[in-house]
Structures are given as structure tokens and as C-alpha cells.
Image 1: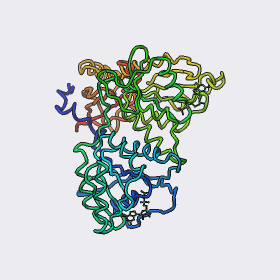
Image 2: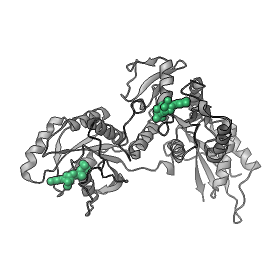
Image 3: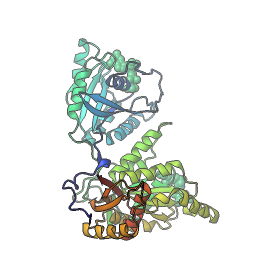
Image 4: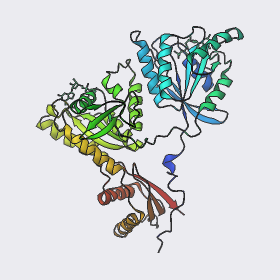
Length: 454
Ligand code: GDP
Ligand code: GDP
């Protein structure tokens, strides 16, 4: 019989194609007009440096592939963003916080000809907190004379200022060397941090009721003080006790503070959402049950699945739904949400408190599904039965076949199937459905990887 021998020894550390190394991310931050965009263009080696002097110019693309000394990285440009004059420092800090959260290293640009301003200081505070490697670029040092001004930037306490002229290119090679040096050896991991209170992210498009829900959950239960024993809490997180269990709610600052996004900056909203999803173990995606599902709802759900986090869908504003709306919602779910059929739904009202008490148990269930481990013996007994009862259809005179499988990872459950020939997508979906019927995984994505022998 062709049931295979032991799996490759490197299985547990090699997540397969999905885990292919992604280039590190470098964010360029600083207040407006210091020359961020000019610097980005310089690094990308673009001649046409499309820097605009017009305030309020927004570009839709903000991240670019870059290479220096044979190393690839992604450059995130936070320029081209015009905050309102009012509350500018806070907005810049906020924007920087977002960019920094998703970066491996940060280039902090200051204008050496102007010196540092309050708005620079606001970013410096964010940088200190982030503990990400920072390269300080003292820009607009167009000639030798201005080097002294660059040196005065030591006072920011961010280490050596690198004098550079983004406009003319002076010093840009040295700056790039410093950036590469600052990058961690391994790219930023999107694996959740384990240990400590479980991390929960409440995410969803604007106005679905995220902050109302958080207030309901945290308000009723005692909100735990930040310095609970043995825990360090990011200032944007909050420890909240639900049914006697303490959870770390991610990025609650962003939910509570009505983040004033400058118009047209959905990009930052989605960056914030993605950062929260990556930091979480389980995501509560809030949708407004009283309105039709939107593309944005589906994008957020898809992002949770692709990032591999446990998922719970909260249909909020249930108090606003009538018979007809609920019927229609049922149809929408069959049409648009089938691919998330494995996630638990709760129909809640953050306003009245309806069924909010179901969140705790549903979160626990999703985490349990996410961490389910199936022994290789049980898995292969199951696969053997499955293949015998439902063989893959014959294609071109050949019959692809699952030979052996193993669970390479939990959180989320990730299976590697060794096969002869290539399995069709439909057959893989069938295998996933059967795996779920057999082993559960409620509330968790299940990832299948195939290694064809031949
Ligand atoms: P951002 O708002 O931080 O992205 O800044 P920009 O890249 O749009 O630059 C703001 C202004 O500073 C533009 O007029 C640039 O031409 C100018 N600028 C940028 N870098 C330099 C530089 O190295 N030297 C000089 N003299 N001007 C610069
Ligand atoms: P967020 O932008 O997702 O944080 O949404 P908010 O929590 O600020 O809520 C947006 C609006 O919806 C506010 O006016 C809330 O009072 C209202 N809202 C939130 N939850 C409910 C609910 O369950 N029922 C009703 N009727 N209104 C709600």
C-alpha cells in the first residue's frame, strides 16, 4: 500500500509556500513638509520625483517595493497627507503610530533647516514607545554648511542624525546603509504573541457600534487596571474582565477616541484594522445587522481569515431589525457569508445589551477551535476513510490521491497533505468541510497545504 512513511523532519518549522518570507517594511514618518515624499522618491530612484507643493495632495498609493544593496524591502510613504491645522500634532502622532505599528523599522525625517517643532516631539514620543529601530534623517542638508544644524538633532534622543539632502541625493547612500543595518534579520512576524491575557480585537467599518459594544462590555464588568500583576499593557490596549476571564482588548484607544481621520484617509483606517487583526488572537467583527452587508464588511472578514485569526461575527443593532430585514439578512448570509460559515454568529444590541453576555462564551469557543490539535494517528485514520469513500475524480487517466497528512501547526489549525498528483480546489474544499465535521474547529480558519510527490 502507498500510505507514506514519516513526514519530512522540517515540517513544524516550515509552514510551506504560505509562509514564504515577506520583505521587511520601512515606514517613513515625520511632520508635513520635512521632505518625506522627496526622500521616498530618492530611495526609489525615481527621476520624475512627483513631489507637489500643493497642500492637501493625496496619493492613493503609499507603499512601494524598494531594493538597496541587493536587499528587498517595502517602503511606506506617509507623506502627501495634510492634517487639519487644529489638533495637528495629535493627528500626526496618530498617523505615525499606525505606520509604525506595521513596520519593521522607521525612518524619522526632520527638517534640519527648521529645527524641531512640537509636532516632531509628538512623533518622538510615539517612536520611543514603539521600541522599533529608528533611523533619524536630518533632511535638507544640501551642503556642508548645514551639517552643524543636522548635528543639533542629537537632542531628540534618537541616536545619530544622518544628514541627507533628499532633493539632491547628498548622503542618501549612507542613510540607506543605516536603514538596512537597522532592519531586523527576520521580518516582522505576523504570528500573534502568546502568553498573558488573550488578545481580542473588535473590528468593523465605522459606525457599526464598536465603541458602543466595548463600552457595554467594559462598562458593565469592572475594567481592570493597567498594571495588573505580570502584565504590561500597550497604552492603546485595555484589560477587561468578561465572565471572570481577563482579556486584552486591542487598540481600544482607536475605538474609543473618535478618531478624526482627515477626509479620504480610509487607508489609515484599514491599516489600523489590519494592525489590530495581526496583534489579536481572536477578532470580533461587528457588522450592522440593520443595513445591507457591504464590501468593506467582507474585506475585513476576509482579512481575519487570511491572517489566520479566530473569528466571531457580531450582528449588532439587532434592535433595529424587523421581520423583513432579518429574512433578507438570512439571504445575504447564504450568498456572501457562506465562506465564513465556520464562524459563530451572535445577534446583539450594544444599545440595549441584548445577548452581549454571549460574547464571552463565543470568544472562548473560537479560541478553543483555533488551538485544536489533531494527532497524526487520528488524522490519518480519518483521511484513510475519507479517501476510500470519496476518492478524487480521475483526471486525464490519473487519479490524484492523498497519501498522508499531518497537522503542522495550531492557531490556526494548519494541515499538510502529501499527495500523488495535484488535488483540485473543489476536492480540497470538500476535505476541509469533512475535517470540520469530524474535528470541529468552530470559529477558526483551517489552512490546508498540499505537497505533491512525483
Ligand atoms: P513631506 O510633506 O514630508 O512629504 O515633504 P515633501 O517631500 O513634499 O517636501 C516638502 C518641500 O521640501 C518640497 O518643496 C521639497 O521640494 C522640499 N525638500 C524636500 N527635500 C529637500 C531637501 O533635501 N532640500 C531642500 N532644499 N528642499 C527639500
Ligand atoms: P463605531 O464607529 O463602530 O465605534 O460605532 P459607535 O459605537 O460609535 O456607534 C455608531 C452609532 O450607532 C451611535 O449613534 C450608536 O449609538 C449607535 N449604535 C451602536 N450600537 C447600537 C445598537 O445596538 N442599536 C442601535 N439602535 N444603535 C446602536
